[in-house]
Length: 146
Image (cartoon, rainbow, N blue to C red; front, side, top):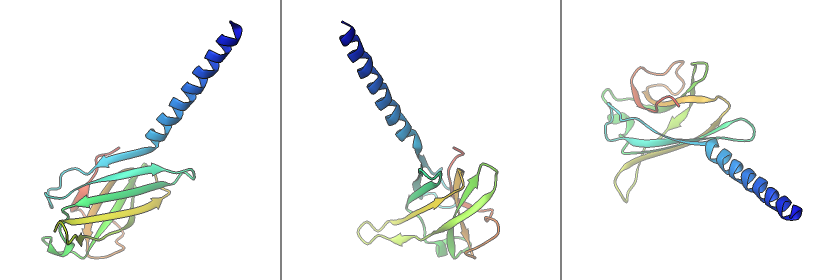
């Protein structure tokens, strides 16, 4: 009877640990949709953020129906991705290119980067410069705070 009880307790502990590890893995990755854009209403997309073992954040962005940046009113030259940090600072983490998919004829964009800054919000602006000091006031797409 004692052997059976020990076996039951050991299985229960293993099961609990396995479930905790699964929960931790799922909580490490966030999938956040962009809110509807006023400037490019057809644009849709999402952001996936995953914290790695080095306390960095891998950011992956997928967007569909994104207008070419030169067709915006007023026309711009670049789409830039910004991260808002916990300290309410804005960090330019890169440029996103829109490409025309010849099969579906939809404009789509992908972007991936790794940053040491913990993001609380991600947004995209259209800019005339690649390295502005601050993001433009006209935001193309943005997530909610997460």
